[in-house]
Length: 346
Image (cartoon, rainbow, N blue to C red; front, side, top):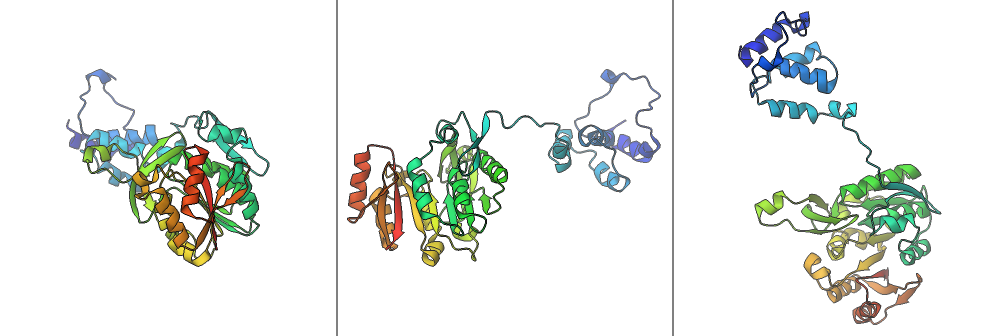
């Protein structure tokens, strides 16, 4: 009996309970194994994967798929929302992740992440920048966190601006955004919105290259094979994500050399709200990522009407009245892979 005949027979008799009451001896090793799905195969997808019999109203539509390739039929049920909700494939996704209680908020951090998570768990993550946030933010303010990572500064901002404030956290790495959203829920921070996307000068796609929680974005490769093997993420302008009725008082941007691209996507916010900007500054990374060198990025900030300061290790701000040359000198003097700068309206 071919698959079509089996489908017709099953379609006529399945409601009468013919399944499971075969008159022939059960010798499954002798059954044929066609490469296409039968109606009986589809019934057992319901039974085994969805955990129920099909409803009368849906059966004819599902049974009509008989004759299609079996792997494609099975995949359609495995990828269904109904199968997902059964939780049959659930495993412990939070192994190695700790919920850390910090003075102002709680945060989920991966303790094996040497770049960020381990320092967050030890309450030693970027104390200098933390002090700047505490000085700049007040209840009711709005914050745009570009490159939010696992959400340390997004959670800190939410605690400082309070229920009447607003925090938009933008992060392309799916693993980071899961932790970020989990932390948002753990704190009950309804004022935080999480967007899983990269930030850039235009809408499109980028490649994410991640190492633990840190990562860089770049344009899609021309080679088709390389693109098919890449982790592709969306890229959106923050201007299009921030609500037009919420003022943004502070932008934090830490995107591993893509700061210029990200801020080019914020030109409407910059013109409207004149927010303070806290930016990681990695001039050696910028040419390959943003297509601009360090002095060029600093000159661009100055051209937007900002004055510059460097965040000192103790969290104080060292004004840079001589502009880009003075900031570059401070960077070289620090002998580190980056410094953090603050741009304030003149």
